[in-house]
Image (cartoon, rainbow, N blue to C red; front, side, top):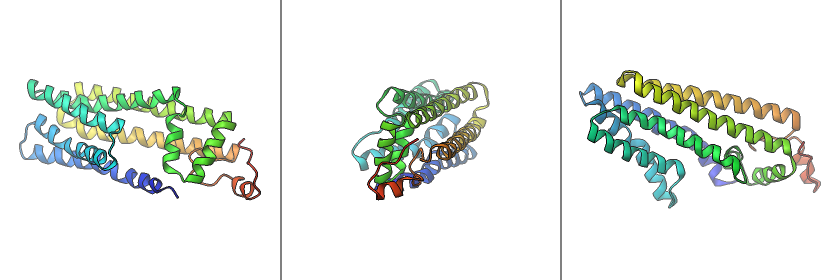
Length: 231
């Protein structure tokens, strides 16, 4: 069993708490205490930044998203301090999904798209070996994972566009809650569509897209020392 598989599932629970729940609670608590909007937005951005820095120290490397979180906060905080405009900090929440969407979309031109890497991150060593084989042998497997990567990148761009509109138009105090709710709805929709696509692919081809379950023919075929037909 790959040790980071369980860690990835734990992160699926921990990340929403640190990135969504704690910042929201901090923001509205500070506003209730009379803090200016820009100050409350700045302080409430601390939990994701602390998590990103802790992860960089623990792993001795800085990830793409972690660097974005820290960099965007520093830039927007500096501009907000100079201008006194809290909407600059709100626009940070639109820039982040836009940058993530660019990063996800860029993997379409790499050796493996984002959806393939995501599945490997969740699965076991055996699932990773099978996924590599299916990637080499099955055009349908490659096509499905590329289409999911396009879906996830498009969802991030949609989140960025709606977040930017909210930051510029809506009352400042309404944006943090509405923005987080919007992001959750978009992410939930993408997860639902991805799971449904994975189920349909498994029903048609007999193999999972993300490696969380054994393929229908893999156990018996591997026991006989044969390679299962991926299609």
